[in-house]
Image 1 (cartoon, one colour):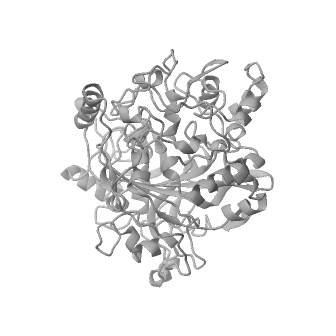
Image 2 (cartoon, rainbow, N blue to C red):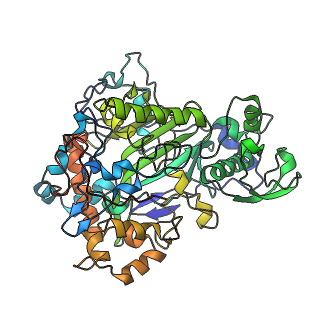
Length: 573
């Protein structure tokens, strides 16, 4: 049990797993088999409006507002663009460095449709006291008082305003994570069962996802059921942990330490030493053309050998899911921490496999489309109920606050917003970013923990491939620390008036990324208030950033193939 930000969180309420656990529950937990998970009661709705239209007012909602930023200032040219748009790693063949130097938008995207960027929220913010916003962000809009998941109850008793195909049931994802994590990061339901979700800590992505720019977030990953079972089809937590290590090894293309494991249990030479013995790490050694292969364990191994699931570097197996919550900022004892209240719940699932050839063909088609038909916008297949599917085989779906602060499904347009970054930027890996940035073995709990258990303080600046600190390098290229170039708190903390760096502040950053990533309490509350205005307006289609005053560093429109002013191409890696 952990007390954070003024509320109690049961992060470690189910320490039932052990290194050698091979069954769903230990003997002491057998009584849990008779328990059921609570169903939320006493919940309320905000204003119910029809969310089911397959239409957009903004024809290019997949182009985020940050992409309209003007990188040129009186102090010179800054480059926040490289973080997303970079020379990619295979099998993401979309080397989109051209986006650093030019606004390569379709004609319908030349006008900036994100009108919330240009609104002044100071009067609205002034009408909300600090205590009011603190009380708001500490309210739980995910769980009801009896511990049930509110949104799940609503989706299982579907309002007609959310039922796109009018069949009386919700055909998309229904939230099933309980945020009750054991010592290995596995989520355990009130009934004592593993939900399959596993939480992990990671380096927040550069720019918008740094809490100093308005939001905190957390991410969980879940592999398909076959990855949680031995070859006899029985739940096997050790096999599940090993399969996670194998997936991490493939995504990061590096060896991953594991607990000492008897390889004869699974018939896989995990450390590639030529014998089935006791392995202490997963050896990354995947080169199919040289007949160097890797394998999952348990039932997943059987399915891999049958060709029913697949394995490749930098790709997740089909059936992989991610759950991502975006949250407000809370202040506890003068420190900024993750709030209980969720702004969004984002879900994705890999439905089908694409091999390297198919992924290259997708990019080739994208390049041809941009060249031959520059006026065309991206097509997003799907709808608000089943989610939107990108060409790489992933489906994305989201839930966001209604005007009363309760979570509701996103509209087609609000989810369309998500598809641009997932699959169409050079920095992504299999359309995702977070798991590649997971903390490595040797960090607290080897990276398998939730932020409310341990925050960002004391985490060193990670090294880029060129040996430079990643966040320090980002500040050197973009001194304000956000894509809009208007985070003055970061600018003033790390740079003098003449834009020369404050070396002592960069030294602090090298040992503690929280020094950069966490805003001051006063500003955190102001950003909460600014975002709450958007919630009350339900104006997400005009932008969902926490904007206090009109942003002056962003173009309201651009010309066809207009140059950004950036001359030097930079690499995210």
